[in-house]
Image 1 (cartoon, rainbow, N blue to C red):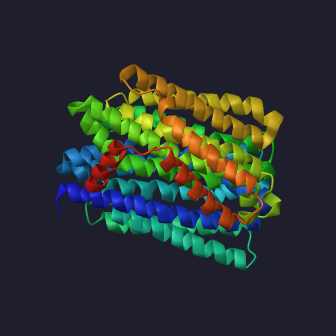
Image 2 (cartoon, helix red, strand yellow; image 1 turned 90 degrees about the horizontal axis):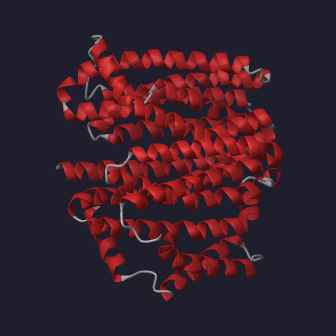
Image 3 (cartoon, rainbow, N blue to C red; image 1 turned 135 degrees about the vertical axis):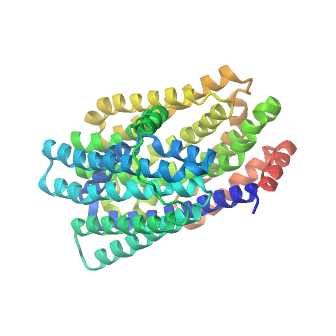
Length: 474
C-alpha cells in the first residue's frame, strides 16, 4: 500500500469511526439526561468537565512531538517510547492526586466529591490509552486506536443502559465508565506491542528536549480546555447542578456538529498547504470554497434549531429539560462562527502562521472566562451560553483579521449573501408552518433551502470543478 493510500485509509477510519463514536455518545447522553434529571446530569457533566483540566497535565503537549520524532526516525522509537512512558506515568500520578486534593479543598457536597474520587481513575486510563494512540498515529495505523475507542464506547454504553434498566445510581455509572476506560487501555496496550517494545533507559537530555518542544503545544492545550470546559465548572460553582444540567444538555447537542468543519478540512487542508507554495490564487479559491460550504451547511442548522429548539428539547430530553431550549437557541449560533474559524485557523497553519492561532485561542478563552464571571450571576446558564457565543465571535474576528493581513482574500460578506438569503427563506417557511409535525417540516425546509440556493445560482462552475478535484483526491 502506497503512502497516499495509507493516509487516505487512515483519514477515512478516523472520520467514520468518529461519526460512529459520537452518535453512540449522543444516544447514551440522551438516556443519561432523561434518567438522571437536571441535577444528576449536572453533577455528571461537572465531574468530567472538572477532570478535563487535570487531563491536560498528563500530556503537556508531548503527544504530537512524539509522533513527529517517531515518524522522522523510526529507529529511535523504543528508547523514545520508554522515556515518554516514564514521563507520562509521573505526570498522570500528579494529575490524579491534584484532582483529588483540589476537589477536597473546594468543599463540594460529599456525593460530588465521591464521584470525582472514583472518576479520577479515568484520568489514569485515558492518559495511557492516549499514549498508545501516539504509536498508532506515527505508524498510520489508526484502525487499532479506533477499535479500542469503539470497544470502550460499546462497553460503556451497554453498562450504562443496563444500570438505567436496573435503576442504578450515578455512582454505579462512574464505576462503569472507569471499567470501560480500563478495557480501552488494555486493548490499546495489546495493539501497541505490534509496533514497538519500549526500552526503559532514562535519558534526561531527551526529557529536556521533549518538554522544550512541547511547551507551546501544552500552552495551547490548556487554553483549549479553559475555553471548552470552564463554563460548566464556573456554572457549577456560582449557580448549581440543575443549571449545569440544563446548559450541558443543550451543549451536548451542539458538539457532534463540529464534525462538519472537521470533515471538510480533512480534504481541503492538504490542498491549502500545497497551494501556498505553488499558487496563492488556488489557495484563495480553496478558502472561498471552504467558507461557502461551511456557511451552506451550518446556517440552515442554526436557523432551523433556533425555530425548533422547544420541540427538539422536548422530543429528546423531555419536559424537565425545557429550560435547555433557550440555551440551545443561543449556543447553536456559536457553531457558525467556530466552524468558519476552523477554516481560518487551518488557512493560517497552511501558510506557516500557526502561532497566530495561539493568540486567537487565548483571546477566546480569556473572553469566555471574563464574560462568564459577568453574565452567569445575572443570567445563569443563559449567560454562560451567551458568553460562549461571544467568545466564538471574538475568535472569528481575530482570525479573520490575521488572515486578511497575510492573504489577499475576498471580504467574507461577499460569500455570505446567498447562503444567508437561502437560510432566511427557509426560516420564513418553517416559521409559517411551525405547527406541523417536525419530521415532516425538517425535510420540507431542506428542500426549500436547496431550491433557494439553486435559484440564487449559489454553486458556480468553479465550485463544481474544485469539488470534483477534492472527491478525486479522496
